[in-house]
Each structure stands twice: as structure tokens, then as C-alpha cells.
Length: 164
Figure: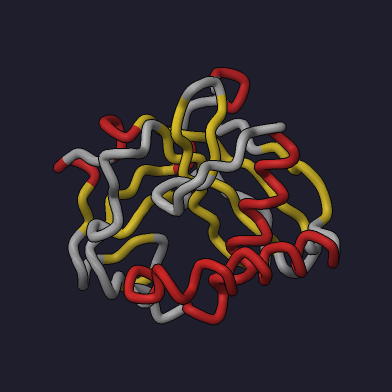
């Protein structure tokens, strides 16, 4: 894992993320209720907005993915925690969530204790969405019992950011 701290999430980005979230809710609300962490969704938008600016990526005209970089449709998956990334922890997506429109999943982590955003690495859609990476509801992941099916890999299995 080649985790990189890309900076502190400013109030400007937090507010911009809330605005993007509020614009998306009326049309996509049914898709945003899969998680019990719905209160974290606006912060996830803020992190995505911050990363999109950091990478100088293009904003798409759809909510099927988060941005376009090097002609690839990229979806950011953010963990909101109170510690920096750890190699032995998992990154992944809900099994209900994958979209064929995504080329790459980019995994980020927001450390709310330090207000920092980390990029952990990435996986191609076909590398992540594979039966070998499926963890079913009720199984354990990072000492947590999963509530939903997930496709996951250990952070040390992520591709390096320099290869994105």
C-alpha cells in the first residue's frame, strides 16, 4: 500500500460536498440508503470533491461514478475513521453497489481526528468485483461483523497511486 496524505479537508470543501449531496438526494435517494451510515454521506461527497480537485479530474454529468481521469470512470470509496490507513485493513464496496460504468475504484480514508484525507490505492472494476473477493453478511472483516455483502481486498493488495 502506498497511502498518501493529500491534505486537510477545509470548511470550503465540506460545504461544497454538502451542496453536491443536497443536489443529488432528490434524484438518487433510493440508492443512498443502503448504509446505516447515511449521516456520513455528505462528508463522503466532500472528500470526493477534494480528491477530484487534487487530481485535477473532470466532473461527470452523472452520479454513476465520481470523476473522469485519463479517460477512465472512477468511483471513490471513502472510509471515515479516526486513524491513518493500515496495510492489513480492508477496502471495498457493497456487493449491491457495483456499476458496469466504473473502470476504477479509488480508495480513500478520511481521518476525522486529524481532519486529513488519505489516498490508499485503487483497483480495476474486474479485479475487485470477483467471487474470490466477496465477503458475505455476517462474516468478519477487520474485527467487524459485516451487515451487508461486500467485495473487499486488503489495503496492501491495492494498486499504487503512482500507477493510476
